[in-house]
Length: 236
Image 1: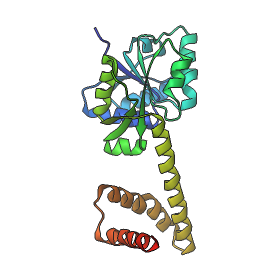
Image 2: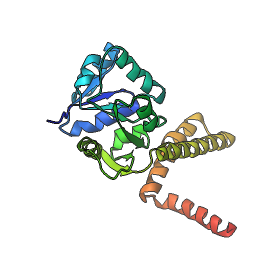
Image 3: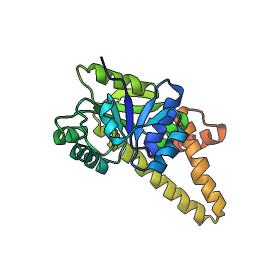
């Protein structure tokens, strides 16, 4: 009989976004956190969760690890040093900057699967429709198929090399910060009030980018977009 108990360790922004989206499903997810106050707050915020202690992690069939990359191996080492075995648990590596292959080499006696989130955790929390990347394989085990079905509930799973997630996230983050800094500099140069600067960065620019992506820009934004296209043609 398969073990369909799901758990999560790492209740930061991504962990909360995933659990928030699961509230509309019938899935109850178990979670562990060493800080009692934070654990109580998390359970109150997400009634679809149940706290388990560290030793009970070995009772799970699936464990989502949304820890920072540098904390992944130390956490597993900590469990094993305390005699807590995860040999019967499929460990899901969601850390963007941590290679699943590297974890498999460090802990070859454990079962690993990479499921990398492509996007921003706040977008996942607010809108759902997450994009998750899993390594392509000829055949997936029943457990791996269950993982794919699980994440398809809150978005879409595509199959690609997991390194592509870090590359794209870095690229998008670089250009987003570049645009923000350029906008910030220009707004200040033109002498606009601080309140205008905050509105341009936190509201206008992000929503224009979202509407551009969705093809729902208004006439004002469309005209500006057309001027960019015209300028590009003239330079060609």
